Amino acid sequence: MSIADVYAGRMQLQQLRYVVAVADTRHFTRAAQREHVAQPSLSQQIRALERELGADLFHRARGHIALTDAGEALLPLARRILADAETARREVQEVVRLRRGRVRIGAPPSLCTSLLPDVLRVFHRRYPGVELVVHENGSQDLVRVLASGELDLALVITPLPGQSPALVTKELLREELVVVSSPGAPPPVPGPYLKVADLRGHPLVMFRHGYDLREFTLSVSRAAGFEPVLSVEGGEMDAVLGFVRAGLGLAVVPSMVAVRSGLRIMPFPPPGLHRTVSVAHRGDVSPPRAARELERILHEHGHRLRPGGSDESGGGDEPGGGDEPGGSDEPGVQGGKSGGDGPDADGGPATGGDADGAAGVGGPPEVSG
Image (cartoon, rainbow, N blue to C red; front, side, top):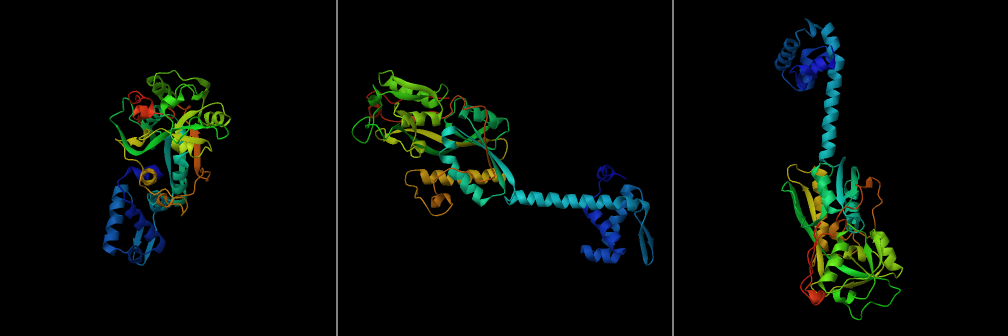
């Protein structure tokens, strides 16, 4: 008898447990007591199994119970099936209780270096047995990867052009865009704010083609009536920040990146320029339990970063308590890129800004994927 033969029938795990109990005790009554079942019920279940298999499993003699050849063949298989079932039960419970599992999340590069590290640190401290896999890419590429089932969640810049109806997005926060400059150079303008029109004549450090931040900066500059002067172009986020630090020019970047850069920060005049960060997942598939918990922590953290939220440092690893700043290098966090930064690797539509708040012309255009 093979394990395939055992599974081919309609036998139940309960019946196999009863067989093992009788084989261990060599007594139907004691087996029933061990299994906390009435002896007639145990006997009936074993008889039903024998009929299913077409063979007696026990020699039944008064005062003597022994396995038949068929019973001897079934017993090790029954033990193995029961052990596998118990292992499966424990494995599922470990996942349900978030002691094990995996979450695959995607995010644009700027969020991988700003928002995500603190959130992943909180999640990892709460659920150290859950593996975290990070895919770094642009919003449009992340949406494609998400739709293919290779991600559980993605942080994307919204609104997305041509968003799939199967995709569910929920706003996480609106992030301010600011101008950064080298702290070793004179401020680009006097005063606390810098208008888009003030960028005229200042060399800019520009992201490579494909970054929405590049398209946004060029668009608002042209809407203000000038073509920006580019001192360096083609960089990724880290390179752009390095070039700005070296005094090569100014750059428009998300505020969460700017505050960690060590560069001088100048906001646009109120209400400022903003982009919307959202959490996305497939609408036709419920995210795994661990992914739902990570999404909950993301929204807790996003609420703390909104105006009026508590953003105090210190106080433990809870998002509401202000986890200490810094990146996440905890074990259990894997990183990886899904083929580069993608068409909107850091931008997405940016909104806000009365525009000679921004530039002296109409509001800055929205720039999509």
